[in-house]
Length: 166
Image 1 (tube, one colour):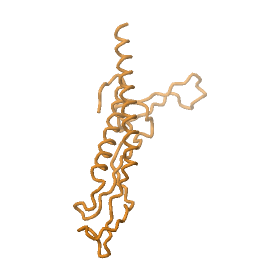
Image 2: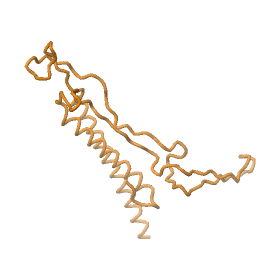
Image 3: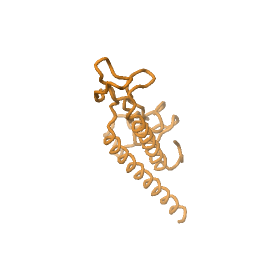
Image 4: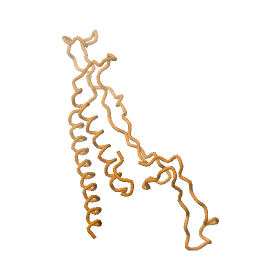
């Protein structure tokens, strides 16, 4: 999600909001499917979680586009052997982070329920590996992170508004 080209605080907060929203959606899906013992593939539902990684190893805090270069500036010419070097950052992604869904492949509980249509020959049913308590704790943490990003976005907005009043 891109909000403003000249104010990176907006983009950082917006990306944080987007990630926390995705995380809350996955948690809600996990809670909704916590009792699902058979999915379309015949297996119990597997817990999903969001993995967030840094894509831009070069300058993760900078919001750079493909035309930008960084010139190394020094106060003493002996600091760097070639102070006129420019660093080209072509091909770097603007947001610097990526998120993707992962699946927890751990086994769920095995429950004795011989009357269940999904029971094996011994009467045991493999259940989902979703723990409602863990999901609720994760939901609260994601909600608090969402609120923190929203507060940061509102602070950035207030700073811009106050600077326009000058």
